[in-house]
Length: 223
Image (cartoon, rainbow, N blue to C red; front, top):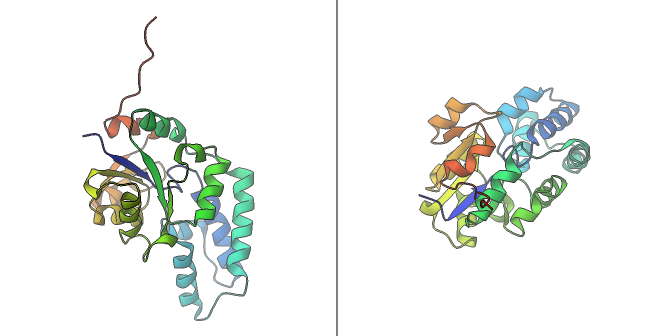
């Protein structure tokens, strides 16, 4: 059945930001005296909020991060986004096809609203979503709690069972399942078996997304 609403995660689903952000994050955490690799950052932190990262790292350190650490990280990450960020291949066409099929779309991300606006703006995807952007900062608990997805559905006037979520992280899939929503798990750079075990339906080609949710591209009329 065609959903009443498609809720997109942002990082790794719409914008190819995970490699950039986790590279800069590994450098920033290592500079604070806790050597960590890019791979470890991705494994531990993908799908969560920046505050979750900070809380975890401060636990490891046994003391707060240096003053200005968060602001410095965000500045360097955003500069890297401006140099390197691209849309996930096929994302623009998939979102446009879904919208043209009459199904509303929105974004529900662990990132800040500022970050969501920046990354969607840099990649040309912002126009597809307008103001239908929801951040974990707007709710009590971030992923893996279901709060952000339930909030997004409520704001868009839909009930959870009529929504489809598109996610790429274990935290995100877990949150969407807890919200009672169908989850399509994008696995181009993720572990398909783990996301499937968490309740997601794996797929690895964003161009196939509209058909997976029951929307077929409109055919050009024959003249």
